[in-house]
Length: 429
Image (cartoon, rainbow, N blue to C red):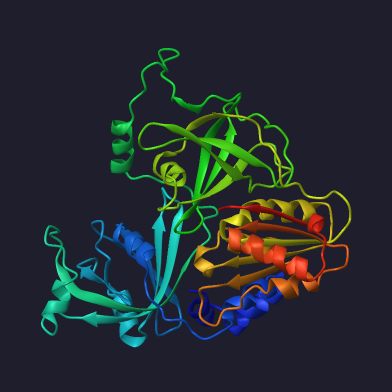
């Protein structure tokens, strides 16, 4: 949703602020190309349907913004079509601030939060107030038969843009029911009782004992997990490009191992971070992690290893990431920046909303980061031939992503006469 989002959000004043703060170049690509068709996809529909509250912003006649909390039963905000959402406006304190604001200015902004999953969705649209005596069928479409609050009107919103927000700093919060359900569902596994205080069973049999201490929903399909030592002591040192062989328990009870690159800063000793793309048509490992890993999940695995190391001299580096291949490339960029080395950073994804760490990278690497979108109409695509050709003669290239990206990079290097030894890669297929 990059183009529509940028058209609304990146006003001249916002663009000037981005220039001052050094992030303008990274966000400029979101404004390129023709406006895309704004339609809520299956991830947005699922997310919206699971919410029991949201925040709504309107603007009054005096120019002051007003933010209102809207709540109701789960699913009270309904998706009525690919470009339309709506909700029943229940009787409240009868101040009618939002109603009055919308009578004068139909623009509305919604902020939807998923605190346990650390996700948030922003929606911009134009709202229409619908009375039951004028359009009873439309009002009936947003009513909740089992909810006794009186419906005064329906609020129907035509979506003009939406964007998945950075999950950073979202503190997980749980409702009373969610806490009760989690407590009732937890059962200790036989054979793993160490004392009167029963401990959680570990997955795996390695010497390095880790526990999941943080979870961040980076995109609708990518979730980041923070791993720490059980006693929160320092972890074994790592270098950029390292990965963990992670034990995973599948739905049938069998245990497998999956490799995940470390996306955390290589200089950090307190925590490792991996990001897992949920592949519905995969072999089951990523789906099992998304379904079962929680805060407190314990892992027993081997220390990280590195088969994708970064050079340690002053040669220029060209970093290329495709999709979830951003994980080791992010760590490499952090390492290069920390030592003051010369580098450029190219990150390609289907849409802006599906690119993990996008917002954080734009802030962290101004002047280095270049973003590309393959599924956004009119979006800029990564030209590997031109990227490799414009690099200094001694530059080293690091490529991580799907197999087609790796093959394209190798082919471009071969055509340009770049020795294969200068092109390092890691595939996520």
